Amino acid sequence: MDYLLDLLQGLGIAAAIGIRPFLPVLLAGALAAANLGIDFEGTDFSFLEGTAFLLVIVVLVAVFGFVDRRRGADTSRDDPVVYALLAVSLVLGALLAAGSIADHSSTWWPGIPIGVAAASLGFLAARSLFGRVRARLDQDAQGALPIYAEGAALVACGASVLFPPLAIIVVVGLAWLLRGGQRRQGEKYAGLRILR
Image (tube, rainbow, N blue to C red; front, side):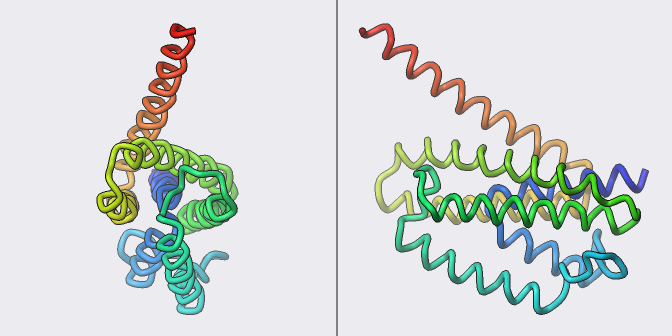
């Protein structure tokens, strides 16, 4: 039972990291340092709650925050910043999911593919949703979207750490958002085909 709960916890944390990568990592590290719902101490992933690692994440928050402000925090475009965020999300999602499982089991390796899959889902769903929403907002309102994304990521991470079964709701919700975005995209192109 502990293994399943740790697996769900890792799944939810990784999905949250996919939405926005850095603040969920800081939250999970802080909760692990306080032994609240998660603990990396005594595992191969103890560095995830270490001061040096968390300081690196804080620096990355500052760097990507600066870059986001310069480019308008738009993740719907295809550019190197978006690909860098995706790569960071996949790595951090895999590490945190494996670390969550390692808390109670030495068989932590399933956390790596689960973390990568969940972070991918979170990234794609958030990119689709915020891309659609961004297109409907004026310039001032668009500036608030990263705050909503960070808030959603923190809530998803915190809920998954403190009550792991909620990770199922997080993942199902993200899959629903992604599917809805793909369906709307298909409807848009179907309408264009009719006009020809």
